[in-house]
Amino acid sequence: MADGQAQASTTTQVPRRGETLPYASNVLAAEVILLFLLAAVEAPRLFFGRRGNLTEQISGVLICVILSVASVFGVLFVLLWQTYVLRVEVILAAIQLFFIGMEIIFGIISIITFAK
Amino acid sequence: MQSSGLVPARFLTIIAHLVLVIVIFWTREENIRACLPEDYDSSEYDDKDLEMLIGLSITFVFFLIELIGFMGGITMFMNFQGLLSTMAHSAAAITLSYFLFDQWPCEWYWYVFGFCSAFPAMMELIYIIGIMCFRKGY
Image (cartoon, rainbow over all chains, first blue to last red; front, side):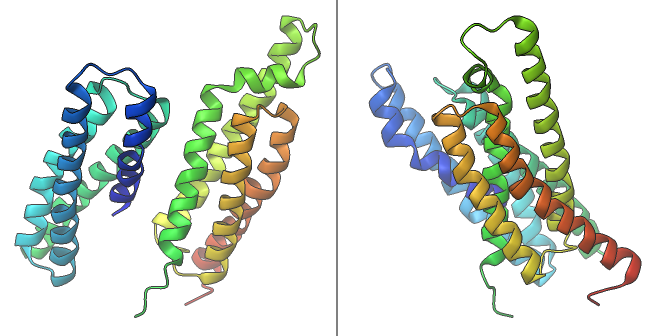
């Protein structure tokens, strides 16, 4: 959940960046769509992770870990492969990567625990 | 159990303060130049730079203490420490935004450091020692 909150701040900055930074013609729309795709992957990931953890079943946490791997690529896009990477975004994306990494580790530990 | 909303608020203010401190760490030039006289030489600059560096590094250590206590669950649900931490870090986040954008002189950072970094971290340390060593709270 922590990285979901960290990512919401990036999404809210979209109008300002579209206005003040010079983008090539179709690139801004593609980046915004990718950002919304990242949010769309994060939402079911968090839902399944929370439900799987509370009900102590493997299936939810397994879906969460698989979606976390996809989220890592999304966050790597924000960190490295965007057209303009702001300094604040580097810091926020790094914190987000740290939390996703922790969630993957703890997800695997909980899968092992629940399987017993 | 009713979720009170204090835990996410505390987390968000700690992260906001942390992000601002990291940004100030990267762009501390302008703040140092704001507190030196017009004709400064590089040794004065280096002295002030070292001061800011030490202050910011100790701030990171305090953040580590606070994050270990909070994310490790030790003081996550203690309402008094949560309230103190939220108020201190939100004040720090606002003040450091002004520090960054208005290019305040570097000495003023020490006030933010004292009230909003050192004080919650010391309280956190006292709580952690109390819980781990003296079994307070449970």
